[in-house]
Image 1 (cartoon, rainbow, N blue to C red):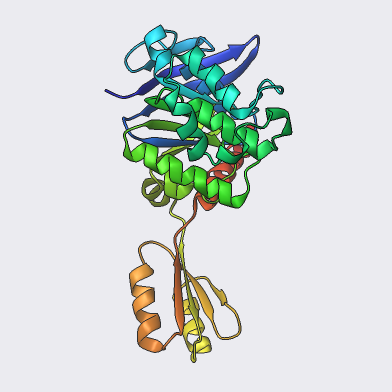
Image 2 (image 1 turned 30 degrees about the horizontal axis):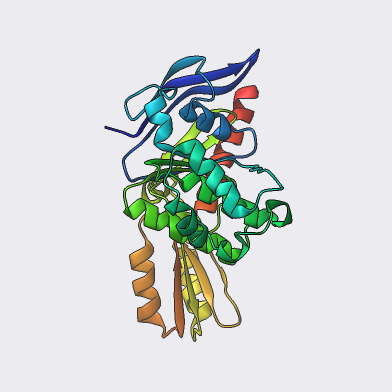
Length: 307
């Protein structure tokens, strides 16, 4: 049984439709990334799963039940984009307060503060916390009660690069332990290694859904091969350009070629046979590349439809 089933869901606010027939699911122990510009419908989808909104059309099921089911809510953890706490409470007092509300064991408080790197600041008032520290406290709050489903709305907002990596390592551990996670973000670099599938939304519609390997195959974007320290740059460039491959210089003695349509292995073989590079980089399309591709394709389709 899937942890989350979103079946043909539309959501309307008055005359405005913010989700259009969304179909989405989440498997046990899976991390699903929701990506899109502001207003794409990511937060609305999360609120439907949380039971904070009722779908205008279609059905949402969480653990096979309605999101409003009290049993379901005990299995959820949620970090909102703009997390706020009582400023006069300390970090540890805040977590104890939420532990009581959730019915979570008090012994989890200290361990969660350690997990998110706030042990040293546990007794400080929250009003003295930076944005990143409040975000980490929010994550600790979401993890109280060991939720089976974790929903994170822009979890890296306010985090420095080190704290961001700590967050992703924590999510990796949770995934390995069987926690299902929906991660909503518009910050793409760094996240792709920590998700199983990506869902790209725009204007309330699902543009693409799949693993990065599936999206790369569907998009047909080239893999970049970069050779450095080459002796025969001009020979390779002429040969590849004549064969229809897009090339460009790479550094003082290097060359980049775009490998399309399954040509990566053959181009790499030619590079190593024709020259002796000091270094070779192979760059598959990133999540950011895929996101840009699907967004641009959607924009072109919309423009053509308007003609």
